[in-house]
Image (cartoon, rainbow, N blue to C red):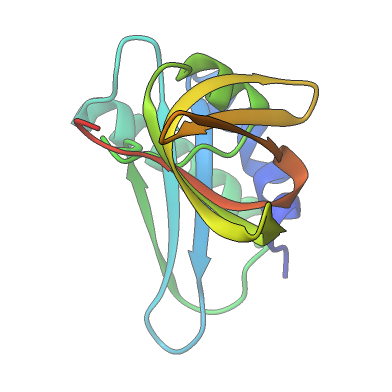
Length: 150
């Protein structure tokens, strides 16, 4: 069974050929009601028709490749207002926005940072929290999300 980066590697080219960005992949496949959830985006935004188009293409690919055993539901969605930031390009695109970042390991004595995303370059993300700048290594970020209306 393909997981994580391998599954993303299989699906991303198909999604990009359709003109979309594969923002994130969530696989919750344990038990009888597994779910494979894809989050897609484009410069024009995402509507229901976009989700249907990607769902049909990815479903056909998954039927042929059969990387996941057992039954699961495929869901395709937009990333939403509190979208995940998973790549350097995402952090660069949303510079100036408020973000919530959870680190794998403590940086400067803390694991959680909520503040203004100042910049992202060379595997470093800079977040300003209460007037203080924190440089966070992208490789040790556990999760990061935009804060809607933040």
